[in-house]
Picture (cartoon, rainbow, N blue to C red):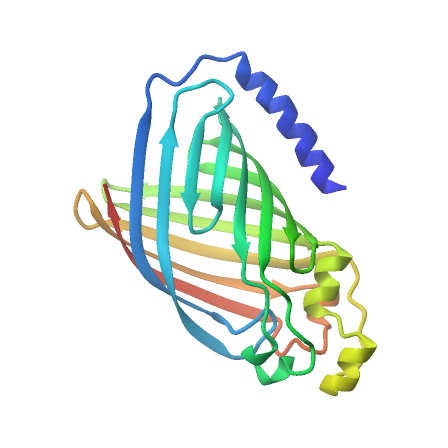
Length: 258
């Protein structure tokens, strides 16, 4: 499985890092803020909603070889970056997964809820200049108990001292537990919802493109925004709960860096 591949890669990179030198000194960095996220009400929904979103990026670099930093971010949750060695990095993190509530949308009535849970993620990445490639494997606990694997590629261009623009693309594969939980319809769910029974098997779930801009208004205050589009694929796209295969999203926020 792809999860095993990432784990084996991670073990090799940790051993490589342990042979290197430690970071020179402890270092803290903190960025906090608030924003608004515009996104579909659920994966496959044709209706959009606006949600408040805290922006958080806290990092502590203790200065030990093989233990690069500890972080707490909105996107990744709480985690540890084991190394940052010649462009290679490896991290593990755990984040909250809010699941899905059948009361979120009339199209979900009768499907039951997907319980909230925790997502454990392992990410390997390589950066050269402004280009970053990554591969992550994520195991859910408490919800669908499914696995997702995502490959991503991004490029950041700096314009002057204040403005940064990042373009990114990515693709996500999911196992049958995840696909069945979010896109399948069992016989019981079919009787309760009126939707046809549907089996969603493992496979590529989606591809996405996004553009993110960051502008430093002052040394500490900044604004950031993201616009993107996700396209559902395969069994996910063909699910009877899916109203729209194209899923746009956008984020706008204000940040303060300590």
